[in-house]
Image (cartoon, rainbow, N blue to C red; front, top):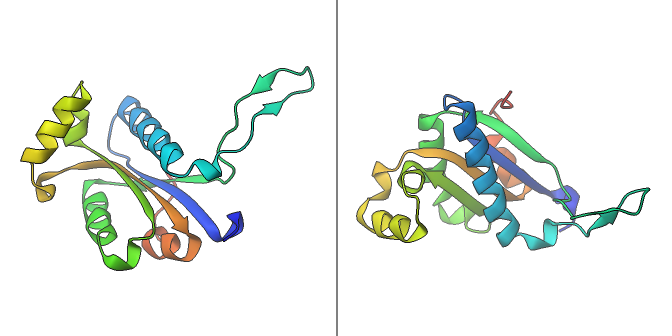
Length: 140
C-alpha cells in the first residue's frame, strides 16, 4: 500500500490536563516511530545547509476522546479484524510508574479491564482506521 492508503491517528482523553495530553501524545509518537520506521522520512537540509532529522511522512490526526470512548475503542481493537493495525496505548498503569521495570511488574498484576486509557494511537489501512474513528472530532 502507498501512503495515501494509510492513516495515523491519536485519540487523547481531552479531559486530561494539557501537560498530560502533551506527554501522552509524545509517548505514543515515540512508540509509533519504533513500530512504523518506514513512515519516518529521510533527513532534510534547509536553504542554509543545516540538517533536520526526518519526521513522519503522513499526517497524524489528533482526535478528541474521553475515558469511556478510549476504553471502548481499545476493546474493539483487540478483535481479529484489526490485528493488522499498529495500536499503541498509554494508560494509568503506565503513567504511575517512573521506571519501566515497575510498569512491567504492575501491568502483570492489573487486568486489562481495570486500565484507564489516556490515549491510543492507531496506524494502518485508512478504511479500517476511519471505521473506528471517523466519527470523532479533532482535539482542539
